[in-house]
Length: 303
View 1: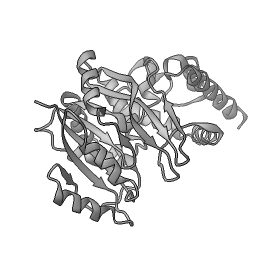
View 2 (view 1 turned 60 degrees about the horizontal axis):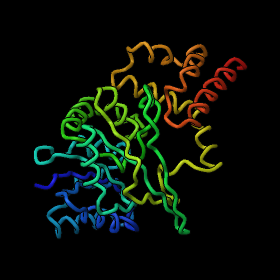
View 3 (view 1 turned 30 degrees about the vertical axis):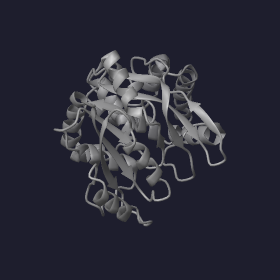
């Protein structure tokens, strides 16, 4: 029998791209697909398009229209909370504007089976309206605490085993009001998985085209503009505040490592800087991580 997948797609004003993405999902080879869509209240007719699709294709269903989430994370948390589980072996996230290669999901199941992993993500191939394409590598070796400070790659590459997803669904349902303060669902789901000792594999292959455009909520973090935006989030306190919140919610707050920095005082940030090599996967990011923590220490002393 073919592996049975529930693909959860979060949409918002996506009429320009969603048709191509949905077609690539429903055309997946070697797997059985059910597509569940949740639409953040839109103004371009996305809801009606989804309604019409569900009427014409029994593989497609949707959650009640009309809710306003204000961001992809809340929409995906809703999908996780309300997803049916009994008829499926694997669960996957999808964005509205990408294009999946036809073997994306069957390749994921093969890697998960071979490595005995419960969580999966992969590299992606970013593409721009001007025709440029670039492989985005997220498959650097995982380190001890990377899950507390970054995602395992774009959430649209994520695949969960039933065992992991049932645990994740139970956790998010129980903590639903709290997770509304989490900005990035992919970071959170990866953190939860690793914190609960589920094995996660990051595939060094790419099986999807990751569309880049002006309406991306989160896109490829490349170039000077993106670097400045990340710096701004660090200095405004968003990044480490999210790391602290996620650590609390996934149950790692009481560990010695998290206790050493979670209060985010100057001395805590200095300790965290010394642990940079254990907090990010990419070599460059390890140095940047430590440098930013030390910069925050200096700035706080000057105030």
